[in-house]
Image 1 (tube, helix red, strand yellow):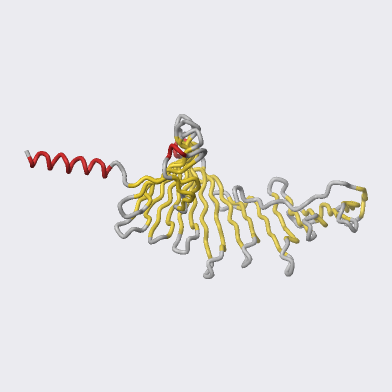
Image 2 (cartoon, one colour):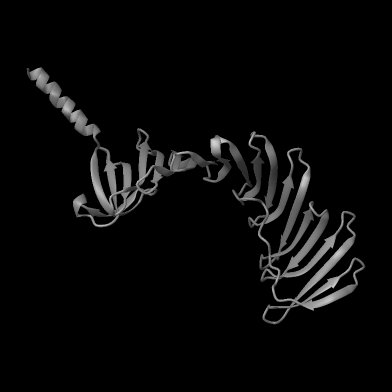
Length: 305
């Protein structure tokens, strides 16, 4: 009889222990940093949003739930640790209002450093819309990104390369067909200031589609010049800008590097558009006119950069 009673007590203790460690409530918090403020003793006394935090016997946070003022679950985080107490994995889920998961995030750690991060976006029917996976090196710098779409099919990937000072030196962004085959890729080169100096667009057979070359002011560091191979128009374009990002000169040449057209833009003392001068293929001025809308510096071309 005593043995049976002892067994019942042990089972009851195990069940109560498994049901979950110590639970605390807070008004403010950061689930990624595992930092929570404004402790509240009783959940029933809470007005507004709050966090429900669970700890194990070692005092480590094992889960954190974020609830809205209407007591609906907004976000949930689960934490896994090594035997030595180091964070091994953090899983975070955001929910639709009173609905299923909307976004899922997951961080993997090794000796306190992130080695991989995953993000997944879902529809209300829990169909995967997009997935992003990022891998990190020992310096906590991303060296590979992969993006997946419907049907878990890869859409793009980006490879990052760094110099001996851990500065971004080169990146390659790949785009894939629905079959998984490479469609095209962009190769991007950076200078020591991590400014883009080259953007090259290639087909799978490494044939060049287009290129963009950039140079910067040696003192003020603004982009002052760019050279472009426009494959669609089969022309070379050279542009020069001022420190305000306004176009000063644009020169177009054909494949034989013969002049097609040159355009000069003039501004007043307040950097407002004043006149535009157009020259023909012989370098002769053929037109001067007023203009109001300035042509300004274009963004970089690599998709998704």
